[in-house]
Length: 369
Image 1: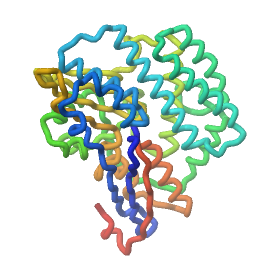
Image 2: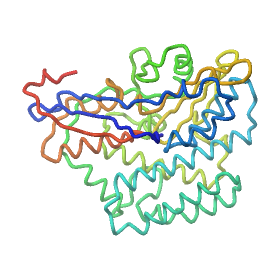
Image 3: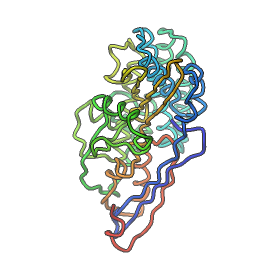
Image 4: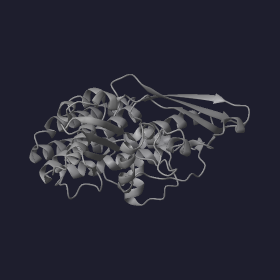
């Protein structure tokens, strides 16, 4: 979901006595899409979205189409819904693989061949997604599975195959160099959709920039999905656990794409749409980085009179959000602790780049939030 415009999130970690005493997040500047889209025909904007978002463009297109259909109270056929879900899943799988390769295996020369084969397989999937041919998709997945297995992705439990490149990477993340404090966790889900979508059009742009639900700033993304789906205790939110969640989801999505890939067997809430009122509609899509929302209001001519979107990054990198909850109060037991902090921040996979700085403060109270 990264915007084509240059943008970054600035994160400053305040250290005192070997502990993280505070975290300051300067969020990204969101594009003024509400102003850019106003007064334009909905159909003319579909091809604009990939130019604005260089990551998760398909998820944005599906969310936009679904929100517009809901505003028009139009019915979407089961075949169209299935096709859109498959497109979203293929894009999510591709983005998850991108994160594995560039975030964890970029310097692994030994696994370069498997990485190249998996990337090529993902590219083929993207190319055939629009064709809707189940046989071609299944054949492409079958060719891709050996490459995933070579990297250590074998099944859905999340534990890479012993001795594999991902298993070795997991071992480096498990080093006891960062001891986090216990933190309360809250996760965004389909149960929150109605409240979120209503506020997108009822509130001003402040909600989209810094969302909260009755004081909650829930986490969304790969790890959140796994904890909720598998009902795991969210006691550990380490970079290692988040990597395991990513590998487990890659295995699960690959199996779904190679099997029936029906709307009935898709995960709950992956694509939802809502008619909010006359000429008002919204949609939620579970994309690679978490839950994406679009909300639109149409005028009598069917043109956009209002458009709002809310991306996963705004939840996870909120000034009081999940990134801060996962790190605040943690103790850095060695110099490698800063690398561990960077790994955790990177595991939240923001849709734009981030700059991470560390600053010593004289007293923990000076940096406390």
